[in-house]
Image (cartoon, rainbow, N blue to C red; front, side):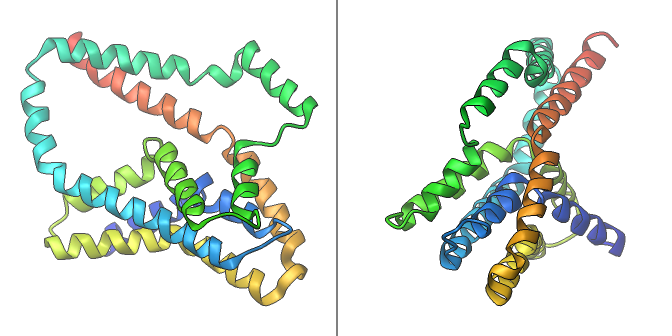
Length: 238
């Protein structure tokens, strides 16, 4: 693997490190009145392990999926199904901009209903929270985001097509996951070292990232839908 490819993987990993699961939720945990460093570490270890295992499964299935894809390319029915799925995803990605979704968001804001991420953090920070709860929330966050993390899927594809040995691919994937969780770990270290002095800064960073990533999942769904529909349409209509 070339230096340029490795730098590309580092860039993709840093993009993935700003997702809701890998940064927004840990930031909310760090700005919570009851900060428990051990739970943040367990959360990050769990979500990192989840993405590592997911990547290993995708790497292991790459050749099989390639063979299946070659055979399915000959089926016009599959192209039609792919086109329908892609169009549905693309249309569905505009849901936040519909009047119904906007009214629901305004109602939640008026009622003071906390976001899903905030509810999860409150659950994790509760005095009686169990380790299973922390691990469960990390896994749910990973599952929700996995399909929409285009940089991660692209990185796995890049690793699978490289000239690395199996051991090299596994090591590269593990390094990618470490970079994904590194920013949150650095912020955790700063929070432990500086205590409440850094809390206002962490809160501002959390608010800024939360605003920027609020629609990221819907954008990802729309992009995936467009790519699927365009790919199927190119084969169906030449």
